[in-house]
Image (tube, rainbow, N blue to C red; front, side, top):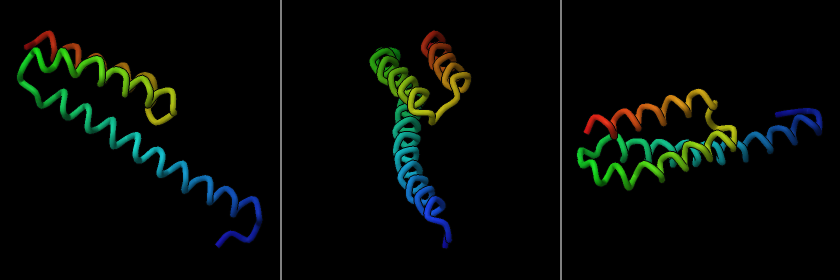
Length: 83
């Protein structure tokens, strides 16, 4: 248990941040799996804007690094072009 008041506050803040980050990462993974598991080009075209939006939001929230987000978007675009 933290002994300092500021340490106790940081512990509370970290718990809240961990829950927020966990839900954001979960949403991101779900959208990426949906987009990567589809074999229909039309369905992928409808999922792409949603996936890109979630990826960009994750970068703004600090869940993803911007280069990681760029790689995810590039992979999605490459998959869409290969179908």
